[in-house]
Length: 117
Image (tube, rainbow, N blue to C red; front, side, top):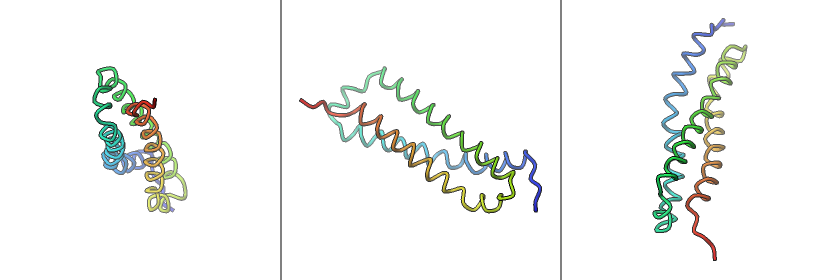
Protein backbone atom coordinates (compact mmCIF):
# COMPACT_ATOMS: atom_id res chain seq x y z
CA UNK A 1 0.00 0.00 0.00
CA UNK A 2 1.26 3.48 -0.88
CA UNK A 3 1.97 5.88 1.90
CA UNK A 4 0.75 9.30 0.78
CA UNK A 5 2.13 12.32 2.54
CA UNK A 6 -0.11 15.29 3.20
CA UNK A 7 1.78 17.50 0.75
CA UNK A 8 1.16 15.05 -2.13
CA UNK A 9 -2.52 14.74 -1.28
CA UNK A 10 -3.00 18.51 -1.10
CA UNK A 11 -1.10 19.07 -4.36
CA UNK A 12 -3.20 16.43 -6.11
CA UNK A 13 -6.40 17.94 -4.71
CA UNK A 14 -5.45 21.42 -5.96
CA UNK A 15 -4.53 20.02 -9.36
CA UNK A 16 -7.88 18.25 -9.67
CA UNK A 17 -10.33 20.73 -8.12
CA UNK A 18 -9.01 24.04 -9.39
CA UNK A 19 -9.24 22.96 -13.02
CA UNK A 20 -12.88 22.03 -12.45
CA UNK A 21 -13.80 25.22 -10.57
CA UNK A 22 -14.20 26.90 -13.96
CA UNK A 23 -16.89 24.38 -14.95
CA UNK A 24 -18.61 24.80 -11.56
CA UNK A 25 -18.73 28.58 -11.89
CA UNK A 26 -19.79 28.40 -15.54
CA UNK A 27 -22.75 26.16 -14.67
CA UNK A 28 -23.88 28.49 -11.89
CA UNK A 29 -23.43 31.59 -14.05
CA UNK A 30 -25.41 29.95 -16.87
CA UNK A 31 -28.30 29.28 -14.50
CA UNK A 32 -28.36 32.89 -13.29
CA UNK A 33 -28.06 34.30 -16.82
CA UNK A 34 -30.74 31.92 -18.05
CA UNK A 35 -33.24 33.13 -15.47
CA UNK A 36 -32.22 36.74 -16.13
CA UNK A 37 -32.89 36.34 -19.85
CA UNK A 38 -36.12 34.40 -19.23
CA UNK A 39 -37.34 37.21 -16.99
CA UNK A 40 -36.70 39.99 -19.49
CA UNK A 41 -37.73 42.79 -19.62
CA UNK A 42 -38.67 42.91 -15.92
CA UNK A 43 -35.34 41.39 -14.84
CA UNK A 44 -33.52 44.27 -16.52
CA UNK A 45 -35.31 46.70 -14.21
CA UNK A 46 -34.28 44.58 -11.20
CA UNK A 47 -30.60 44.64 -12.23
CA UNK A 48 -29.51 47.28 -9.71
CA UNK A 49 -26.19 47.80 -8.01
CA UNK A 50 -27.65 46.23 -4.86
CA UNK A 51 -28.58 43.10 -6.81
CA UNK A 52 -25.10 42.92 -8.33
CA UNK A 53 -23.58 43.22 -4.84
CA UNK A 54 -25.82 40.39 -3.69
CA UNK A 55 -24.81 38.25 -6.67
CA UNK A 56 -21.15 38.90 -5.89
CA UNK A 57 -21.59 37.80 -2.27
CA UNK A 58 -23.45 34.67 -3.40
CA UNK A 59 -20.71 33.87 -5.94
CA UNK A 60 -18.04 34.17 -3.24
CA UNK A 61 -20.08 31.94 -0.90
CA UNK A 62 -20.56 29.38 -3.69
CA UNK A 63 -16.80 29.25 -4.15
CA UNK A 64 -16.21 28.89 -0.40
CA UNK A 65 -18.65 25.97 -0.48
CA UNK A 66 -16.71 24.50 -3.42
CA UNK A 67 -13.58 24.49 -1.25
CA UNK A 68 -15.19 21.98 1.12
CA UNK A 69 -14.41 19.34 -1.50
CA UNK A 70 -10.75 19.68 -0.49
CA UNK A 71 -11.51 18.34 2.99
CA UNK A 72 -13.17 15.22 1.61
CA UNK A 73 -10.58 14.77 -1.11
CA UNK A 74 -7.48 15.03 1.07
CA UNK A 75 -9.04 12.82 3.76
CA UNK A 76 -9.93 10.15 1.18
CA UNK A 77 -6.47 10.32 -0.41
CA UNK A 78 -4.84 9.75 2.96
CA UNK A 79 -6.92 6.60 3.48
CA UNK A 80 -6.43 3.11 2.16
CA UNK A 81 -9.07 3.86 -0.48
CA UNK A 82 -6.90 6.40 -2.33
CA UNK A 83 -6.82 4.62 -5.70
CA UNK A 84 -10.56 3.99 -5.71
CA UNK A 85 -11.22 7.56 -4.61
CA UNK A 86 -9.06 9.03 -7.39
CA UNK A 87 -11.05 7.06 -9.95
CA UNK A 88 -14.47 8.08 -8.60
CA UNK A 89 -14.10 11.53 -7.09
CA UNK A 90 -15.83 12.95 -10.14
CA UNK A 91 -19.02 11.74 -8.41
CA UNK A 92 -18.43 14.30 -5.63
CA UNK A 93 -17.93 16.97 -8.29
CA UNK A 94 -21.18 16.02 -10.01
CA UNK A 95 -23.15 15.96 -6.76
CA UNK A 96 -21.66 19.31 -5.76
CA UNK A 97 -22.53 20.92 -9.09
CA UNK A 98 -26.08 19.55 -8.93
CA UNK A 99 -26.57 20.71 -5.34
CA UNK A 100 -25.13 24.17 -6.02
CA UNK A 101 -27.17 24.39 -9.22
CA UNK A 102 -30.41 23.71 -7.33
CA UNK A 103 -29.58 26.38 -4.75
CA UNK A 104 -28.55 28.82 -7.49
CA UNK A 105 -31.80 28.17 -9.35
CA UNK A 106 -33.83 28.94 -6.23
CA UNK A 107 -32.01 32.25 -5.73
CA UNK A 108 -32.28 33.15 -9.43
CA UNK A 109 -36.02 32.49 -9.46
CA UNK A 110 -36.40 34.77 -6.45
CA UNK A 111 -34.28 37.50 -8.01
CA UNK A 112 -35.70 37.54 -11.50
CA UNK A 113 -39.22 36.19 -11.22
CA UNK A 114 -42.06 38.12 -12.78
CA UNK A 115 -44.47 39.44 -10.12
CA UNK A 116 -47.82 37.66 -10.13
CA UNK A 117 -50.98 39.80 -9.88
